[in-house]
Every structure is written in structure tokens, then in C-alpha cells.
Image (cartoon, rainbow, N blue to C red; front, side, top):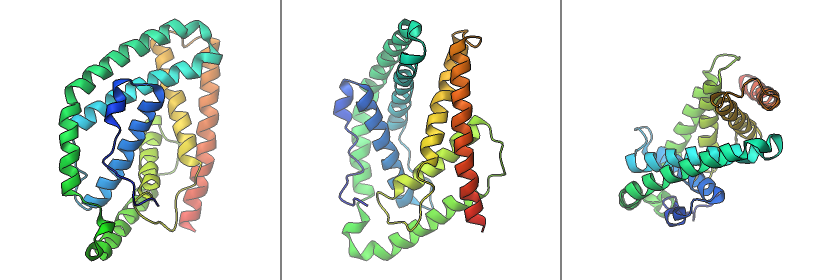
Amino acid sequence: MKKNRNPFSLGLKSLKKPTPKRIYKFRRRVKRLMAYLTLYAFPAETPISPALTAIYKAAGKLRQAYLIRKQLEDLDPTLHKKVQKLIRKRKKQFLQVYDTHRRLLRQQLRNWKRQFPLPWLYPETQQSWKKQTKNWINLVKAKLRAYPPPPYTPQVWHEIRKWLRQWELAKTWVSFSDLPPSHLTKKLGDARDLYLLLRWLEKQGLSETPTYTQVQAAYTQKEQEALMLWQAYRSAGSS
């Protein structure tokens, strides 16, 4: 656990040139920040920021376009022009959203920094912080246990992954004695990326192509690998 990490540093300035690496880092930092705010505010609702939400969603759409390009580089190079057009469109949209909301977001981050000071810097907060985070992780485990047995839709898998990622990222701020299977969220993330690629191919009218069939097979494999890890985790939790 790296308690010296600043949860409010999102690297906003770097997004003026939204490369794939910078977009990825930004979205990861946002997820880590939201895990921190969720822990801090619990049991109240996690604070929200319309400016952050707007930039994060636009960054997500741009990242998806970058991922589509990466996935199709070897699968189907003939789609390169289509993907480049998608990237240009989403980069333009992202920069518009970024220019509109970045000043508001910087102010919000300054407000949050005052409102949610790092609790481990103040000895008088240690006991309440430990109790609060313990109650939060118990809630997360209860939420995960509450899911019925599979099969799940892609959206339900996405929900499960979000709970698991919050749990994993919360370890930045809290020492947990246990964590979910280390490869589960990675498998679910890979499956999600392939699912979104399938949806894009469908929109392009390419659902009857060899490329689509190949991506669909890869998605099924990733989903099955995630399912095995998920069932093992649930079985261990109920034993």
C-alpha cells in the first residue's frame, strides 16, 4: 500500500495530447480516486463531479477506439482506415469535452482535497478509518455473494468487474488481508474489450465476416476463463 500517493493528481495537463498511454493512465487514476472517495465517504454515497464524469466518459470512448485499432492490427488490417476515422472523431470529441470541463474539474479536485484529507496523516482518525474501511469491504463481498449463479449477460459481468476493481484499487489506501483472484478482473476486462469490438463490427455491418467469427471465438474463450475463476472464488467464499 502506497499511502504517499496523491489521489487527487490525475495528470490533467498531459491530456492536451491524448495518446493511448495518457488516456489509459488518466482513467486508472480516476478509478483509484473514486475508490478513495468511496472509502472516505462510506456509508454515504460516493461524491460525484459532472466535470469528471464527462471527461472520464469521453476518455473511455477514445480508449475504446484505440483498443479497436490495436485489436484489428493483426486480425484485419483492411479496416485500418475505418478505425482511424473513428479515432479522429473521438479524439476531437474528447478534446472538446476536456476544454469545456477541465477548469471545473481542477476546482473540484481542490475542493475534494480539502474536504477529504488523507486520514493516515492524522492519528486521531486511525480507528474510525479502519472500522469504516472494514465495513466497506464487507459490503463489497456481500454484493458479490448476492449475484445469482451464472450465466450472466455482458452487462452483469461488467458490473461484477467494477466491484472487483474497486476492491483491488482500494488496496492503494487500505491493507486488506485478502483480495479477489488476481487474474479475474484481467480476464473480465479482456472479455469486455472483445465484446465492445464485436458491437463495433456489427455497427459496421461486418457480423458475417471471418474477422467477426474470430473475435467472437476469442470473446467466448475469455468469458469461459473468467467464469472458471469466478466460480472458484464463489466456492471458496461459501466453504
